[in-house]
Length: 332
Image (tube, rainbow, N blue to C red):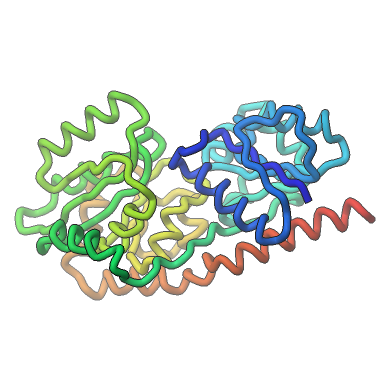
């Protein structure tokens, strides 16, 4: 089939939406389809359109339905769709009314949908390829990481610096750790505004436990993640963060804000959840993870049990099943 994937994220962007679009394109091509990734739909002919972001992709969804009245549309929902736009934005709501199917990245997302939309919703977990073993090409990078560790308890924070990510919460929590703590916060991701960049640079200068590394190639981010003792996801809004699955596959324990996007993946009883914006609670969990080996092992074991959800074979099968379902319905 001819499939178009719409993502608002531009080419060469390292945003989550672009990474998701690239991964889905790879999967759909393996299933034997011709796939194009676009920022906007114009007049191309496709059998299926997969649109990331109900609100921002709404004009493309409308145009595609006008040009391809018999074709199928899948709308994939982001965190801002689910936990902000769908509650008040008519364009986002109309996108879901038009969609033949809706894709969400974790099961609690379905609770945000109206009953008419829920019947069209399918959960597809974001898979992660395991990192390859060490090779001669990675020796220099490994030496770099070993040098950086220097006996510290490295905690990584991965994600672009945006308000919805609450990007400086972990740095603030680290400030209140005891003097003896070896915790070091390594934050990766580009700043979305000059003000965010200025704050990150200021925090790096003022906070001896914090360093902003800026935007790095994904391979480098994953290697630093794998080297870390802990990963923290402090977001205020997430649809189902890819960094959660990447940390799980890398066997790196997680601390995460208690929001639906995180709870939907980790579970309501996951032992590493903290309330959104609660700096002191996060500081206590950081200190506990550093000092209590049994607690750190409990976090790691809880994540390990979730690893099968993010098997690439499982994600590919989910897409194959969804497409078969759509086109069997069409031909009935």
